[in-house]
Length: 100
Image (cartoon, rainbow, N blue to C red; front, side, top):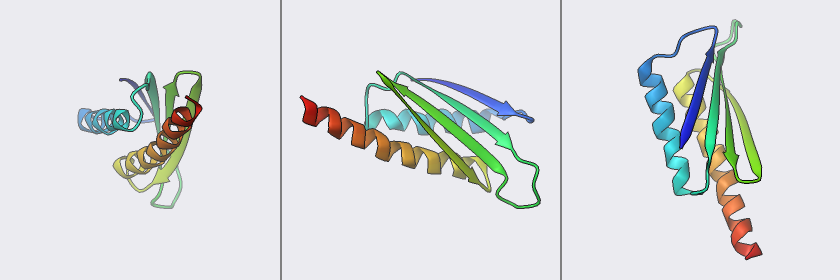
């Protein structure tokens, strides 16, 4: 799957990008028709600790899913967002199976 990553107001290191790529590749286990995904990472300037925002957009045929999470670390936010996407993709796969 093609993964586009963008980091706003900071530069992401290779280890974080590899983590994102590996985590998003696991989504293909739940739904194998994923075309591509876009990941936007942003650091919000607040006094709170949960200032890392991750928005993941997954493109599948005839649809697009967007999940936005805010956590203490980018890894935690990506993991949480992917869990939400897994549920959405399972639901879509089930729906497609029932239509056939």
